[in-house]
Image 1 (cartoon, rainbow, N blue to C red):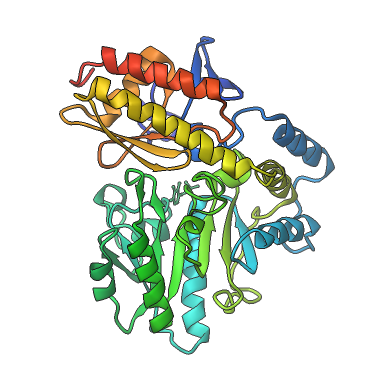
Image 2 (image 1 turned 135 degrees about the vertical axis):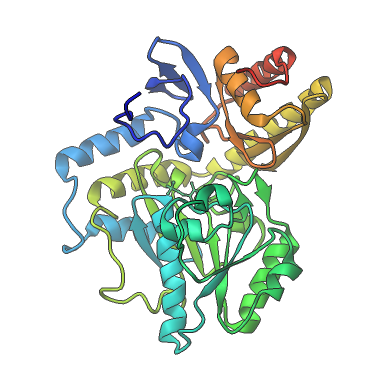
Length: 398
Ligand SMILES: *Cc1c(COP(=O)(O)O)cnc(C)c1O
């Protein structure tokens, strides 16, 4: 077999979407799927949302791209709106989550550099973390499946166990720049940080002059029922990477920082050709128009509670298969009991029940619906999951 034209790095399934309608995807043969994956927490407003679609269409016709050589009224306006709704004083726009993480890593290193401590270049990160697929981002995880064959990776990372505060603090030395951590691990299996863990990291940063860098690429932007996941903890970060939901499907990311943390990011230190172009900014504004409406985040929380309740009520009827529910808001995980494998159950739901979910670490099925789901979608998902659980035979289907 010749090499496929599309580089075969993904084990793609047989769903081949050609159209989206709200919370549904329609495949090549006209088949419909209830989309509780949302392009992995990206399509916050579902598919074809009229406000987002219109904003992108109008901006495309007005001005799509210029360059960061020119002034950016569009970038200034979106950055200001994000600053007004976060801990941050300043924002750098990227095209992806990994680039937002890259910018966060560079910002942290530059901070210590301009403070006269260039030896403080190491970020302490956590096992089962996921920060993206660039060389910098895979260097920031110690998962072999992402790193194998890409050595030499970037120095400047040390790895601790997620939610093990003692272990993380024990790694601090003269080279430590700070911590890079997801408040709620997504890929790792929908694992929220414990409050003691996140508060402990913040305290260590305050005492030792380190930076708390949060990766909110998946858990930020309303997904957990607050704008930022760290708001649940009452912990204020120094730097945050955001992406996924920020453009609702338009490729967009952002690195947010306080004035102090970003003080090394002066003229010439960073850049991006596309990052922050007028088209991306229009998409970003349209998302904020919707999610910053009064009561939107409360609505996400209420829907998350309803979905969680439905899942928890369903578990005892299928306790050979389902263990427990975890997560926050509409970032939920359903832990599968062995010998069943979450990936097989996700495939079963998709192929036989028209329900799209995402597999994650720790044998957890990720449930990431659009933030605009309604009661009827929750009921439909629970029904499909119950049907799937009844029909599912926990052995590999191939
Ligand atoms: C998806 C993800 C990334 C990487 O985002 P890309 O847009 O794929 O580069 C980084 N961090 C977290 C937590 C993510 O979930």
